[in-house]
Length: 180
Image (cartoon, rainbow, N blue to C red):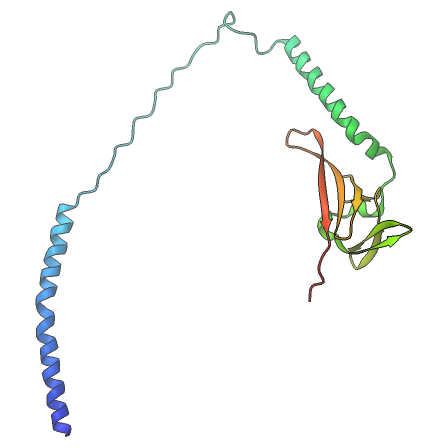
């Protein structure tokens, strides 16, 4: 029984060895042909445009360094700044509340309750609890609480936009689920 297995294994190995040699040469030849036929297409880089300097002629357009134009531009900027400053001016004159020195990211609404017919939110900051009602201030952006519900605190913030103008926006603190 053992000699039959040995003979069978030898015959199988010889059959496999005979099949493998012919396809490899053909494959190598095909790869060489494909490599020789394939030529990359490279588009040339366009030449840079030539710079032609132009001279400035006073008679064509307005003078860029005119003192009157500069004064007018500064006046316009100052009038828009004062109108926007009127939005934040009352906030600068009042006394700050304790939660205005802390960012909203550090605050979590953990609950609410009804106190004398008015809904009051419970805000947790640094393991301390605070009672918040409409009219209180939160966060560094002059955030005045406008509404307290069972699930969120809505506030109006005054922030500067990209142009440096003061604008109002709405921010909310959502009720946070207890993390396990």
